Amino acid sequence: MHGVWYAGIGAAFLLGLLFVLAYSRRGPAPRGRHGTSPAVDDTAEATRTPQPDTTRNATAEAAAVRQAAQTEAEGLRRVAEAEAEATRRAARIEAEAARGQIDTVLAEAREQAAALVADTRRSGAAEVEKLTEELQRQRSVHAARAARLDETEARLDGQEVRLTQRAAELQRQVTELTADKAALDAQARQVQADRAAVEAAVQSHEHELERIAGLTAEDAKAELLAGVETAARREAAVLVRTIENEARAEGTDRARSIVVEAVQRVASSQTTETVVSVLHLPADDMKGRIIGREGRNIRSFEAITGVNVLIDDTPEAVLLSCFDPVRREVGRLTLERLILDGRIHPHRIEEAYEQSLVEVDELCLRAARDAVADVGVGPLDERLMPTLGRLKYRTSYGQNVLGHLVETAHIAGVMAAELGIEPTLVKRCAFLHDIGKALTHEVEGSHAIIGAELLRKYGEDEAVAHAVEAHHNEVQPRTVEAVLTQASDTCSAARPGARRESLESYVKRLARIEEIASARPGVEKVFAMQAGREVRVMVQPSEVDDLASSVMAREIAKQIEDELTYPGQIRVTVVRESRSTEIAH
Image (cartoon, rainbow, N blue to C red):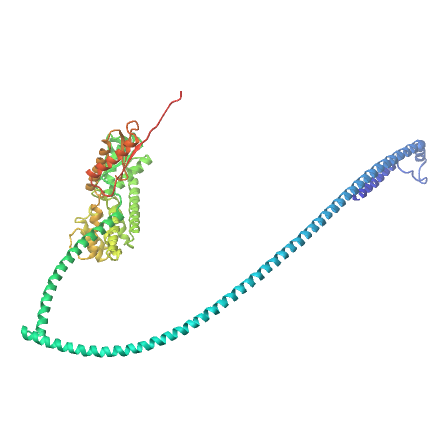
C-alpha cells in the first residue's frame, strides 16, 4: 500500500512540473494599455501580429504535455497497481504460511498434550504398581516379624523351663558341697594332727644327727653356704670372662659395621689434581702473543701473578705451574681473559689479574657457603668463609680438601647418630678440622694447631678447637667429639679411590680386569665401566657364537674372582653384534 501512495505522489509532482514548463513557454503576459507611448504600442502591435500561430503551438505543446503526463500517470498507475497486487499476493502467501505454521504448532501442541497425557497415565500406573509392591513387601515384612516374635516367645518358654531345671540341679549340688565341706574339715584336722607328729619326729631326728655329727644345724648350714659361695664365685668369674670376651668381640664388630656403613653412605668421588694446570689455546700463534716481543708479556705475567708459564711443543696448549693452588687458579683465569680479549700487554695483564683475583675470591666464598649449607652445621663466622673457600683449590695427596671436609662431616654425623650422640657438634668439629691447610703457605706450623688457633681467634667453641688440634694427636684427645673427628678423618682419607696411593691400586685393578678379558680368543674390545663394577667385552661374531659368549662370560668372571680382591661385585657382559652390509651400485 505504501508503494501505491508513493506512486500517486510522484505522478502529481510530475504533472505540476509539466504544467509549469508549458506556461513558461507561452511568454510574458501582455502589459496594460494605459501609460504606454505610441512607439511602444506599435512595437507591441508588431509583436502581437503572429499571435494565432503562437497560441496554436502552445496549445499543441500543452496537449502533448497533457498526453505525456496522462501516459506517464497511466504507467505509474499500472506500476502502482502491479506493486499493490504483488504486495497483496505476498501478504496472502505470508498469511497462508502463518496459517500453516499455526496449524503445525497446534498439531504439535495436540501431539505433545497427548504424549504428556500418555506419560502421565504410564507414570501413574507405574506409581500404582510401585505402591502395590511396597504394600505387599510391608505385609511380608510384618508377617516375617510376627513369625520371628512367635519363634522368640517359644524359645523364651524353653529357656524358662531349662532355667528351672538348672536351679534344681544347683540346689542339689549345694547340698552335696555342704556335705563334702564337712568331710574336708575332718580330714584337715586329721592332717594337722599328722603334721604335728611328723614335726616332732623330725626334731628328734635332727637332735640325733647333731649328737652323732658333733655340729649344730646352724654350723652345718654355714659350712654348706661357704662351699656353695666358693663354687658360685668360681662359676661367676668364668661367666664374667666369657661375657667380657663376647662383649669385646661384639663391640669390635659393631664399631666396624658403623664405620663401614658411614663410609658407604657418604663416600664421594675424588679427582687427582697436581700442581700443573693445562690451558687450551684457540690457535698455536697465540703462544707468540703470550710470549710477546723479547719475552716482555710472559715476564710481566709471571711477575704479576706468581705463576710460571711453560710453553712447549704441545699443540694449542700451555702449562701453568704453581704450588699455591689459589694463585694458580687466578693465573689461569687471567690468561683466559687475556686470550678472549686478544690484547696482551703488561697494563692489560694487571687489569685482568685484578678482575680474576676478585672472581676467585667470589668463587671461594660461594664454595664455602655451599659446603656449609650441604653439611648443615649451622652458621659460621663470616671471617672464616674466605679461608674455608680457599680449600676448594687445595688438595692433599690428590684429594680435594673442601670435598674431604664435607665427606668427613657426613661420616662423623652418621657415627654420632649410630652411637646416640647429638650429631651437630660432631659434624662441626669434623667439618673444620683441616681449615688450617688454607694457611700453611702463610703460617709456619702444623695445620691442626694453625686451624685451632684460627678458630679460637674468631670465637669458635672450645670443644671444636680442641677436636681440630687433636685430630693428628699433636694434643691428646679428651672428648668424644675429638675421637670421632679422628675416626671420620681416617675413614675419608683411607677409603679406596680417595687418595693417590689407593688410586694407583685401583687403576692397577682396572688394568688387570681388562687384561683378563682381552686374553680370550675372539675378543675385539674391552671396556671397564662404572668405576670397575662392570666389564663389557666386544667379541668378533664370526669367531664367537652365542653359546661360546656365555661360556666366555662365566670364565672371565671366575678368573676375576680367583685373582683379584675388590669390594662388591663385578658384572661381566659379553656383547656379540652381527652386522650385514651391502653396497648398491
